[in-house]
Length: 116
Image 1 (tube, rainbow, N blue to C red):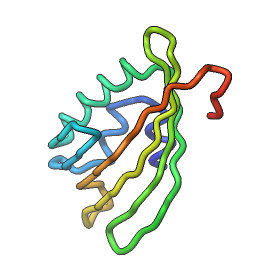
Image 2 (cartoon, rainbow, N blue to C red):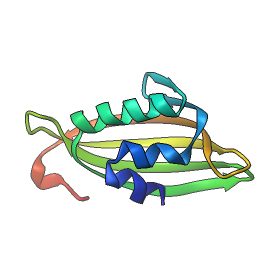
Image 3 (cartoon, helix red, strand yellow):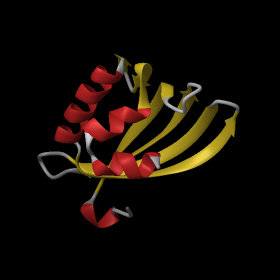
Image 4 (cartoon, rainbow, N blue to C red):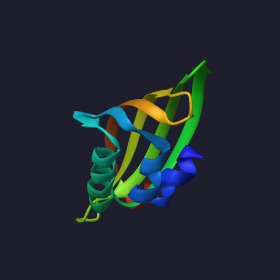
C-alpha cells in the first residue's frame, strides 16, 4: 500500500499515512510533522519528474519495519536517475507511521537503462 500511495505522487493523500507529529530523516532533511511532510513531498515531486517507486519488505517485528526500495525519475534537464535506499519505519497503535528514517543514493542512468 505504501508503494501504491507514493506512486500517486499526491502529497495530500500520502501524508495521511503519517502521525500528526511524525519524525523523518530523508537524506539530510529532518522533517517534523505531517504538514512538513506534505510540503517536502510537493517539493520532491516538482523536482523528481515521472517518479516510479518499487518497495520490498526487508523485515518486521512488533511495530517496526525495514524496507528497501528503488525509484526512477528525471530532472527538468531530462537526466534520468535510479535512486536506491533503505527505510526504517515505526508505527503508532493506530497503524500510522510515526517515524521514518531513509538513506538514499542516486545513480545517473540513461533513459534506455530504465527498468521501472
